[in-house]
Length: 73
Image (cartoon, rainbow, N blue to C red; front, side, top):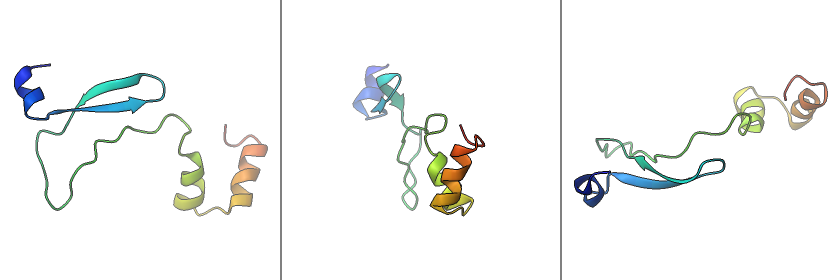
C-alpha cells in the first residue's frame, strides 16, 4: 500500500465473512451518474434465494421444494 494512494482514499476496508476485514482497491475512476459501491461478491450459494425467486420467478414454495428434493445445495 503506497502512502499516496492511501492519502487519496484509494483503499476501502470491507468485511468478508471468511477472510475477515481487508483493504481493497477502489476503482481507478469515478462515475457521477452511476457511482460504484465496491461491495463484496456473495459467497457460493449466499444469493440462492434471490436467484430462485427474483431472477427465475419461482414462488417461495417452489424454491423450498428445490432445496428439499436436492436440486439446490
